[in-house]
Image 1 (cartoon, rainbow, N blue to C red):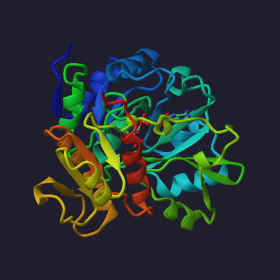
Image 2: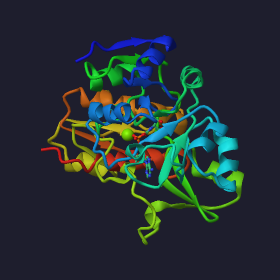
Image 3: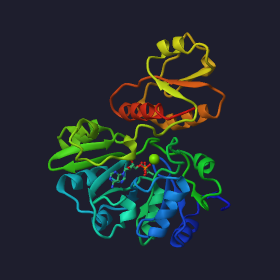
Image 4: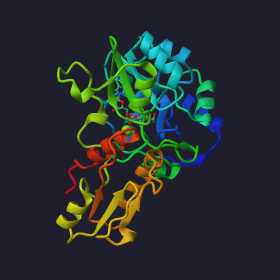
Length: 325
Ligand code: TXA
Ligand code: MG
């Protein structure tokens, strides 16, 4: 057991990481649970603290595109994307070099790498002699943390330190892509919109789930149950669902509207201004808040299926499938 401290002191994080401890770090997407990616003991501690199965690989975090080249082979299109969108909410899946231990990639020949856009964490990464492996800093399967208090709730006593970078500005995990020949495969929709990638690179992206030949690796973001609240959650037509569950004590998550058929105090609007970025920032905080109230059921709207709405819908859909008896 640890006493878990929350502070903004980078030096403290460096000391702990150099001792092969794990530390929660802020990124623009969600908080990560970080350890020395090149040290198998540190990486094993990450899996242990969050109860994550070892078959589920971790993303490596570094501070520059040059650093990425130390750990992976990078093709031309990936390099263009990296130069344009990193630091930022983009993760590239690339052929790994031998410098990366197998425990990080769960034995895969590919490694996921990104450069987080958070000044504290970039400063931290620049002062370390190694990159950081970091999954989201929550218990496996639960909603990702976007505030230091969320990390504390999941990992109090299990880790020594949370580096406090305040609220995550994007609030959804990174978009994971892989370039195969000249195709761009999206393994996980996230904080970087596919429309923005496509407009820049001039190639239409392909969602991994549209490819049936099983040649692309599974990512845990593709597990059916993930990002899930303990309170059952259903996504769909709110009016119909409110009718179907009228006996239950229900809260609803909506984009911008208020429904007549439910008391306003049970309605949680993610962006009254109708802005998907704002909704994305509010999503996980709202899911966690509702999970701590006494609702029997959370009903969520289907968001517009464009831009960040695609990632929001993906998270809400996955949150539905957990076994909640
Ligand atoms: O925004 C983010 O990406 C956050 C912050 C902390 O950087 N990290 C994050 O990590 O969401 P995690 O572990 O919760 O999700 C990473 C996803 C998982 O679905 C994992 O299976 C996939 O990336 N992944 C990682 N390495 C992979 C690999 N070598 N091959 C295929 N999938 C991989
Ligand atoms: Mg996660």
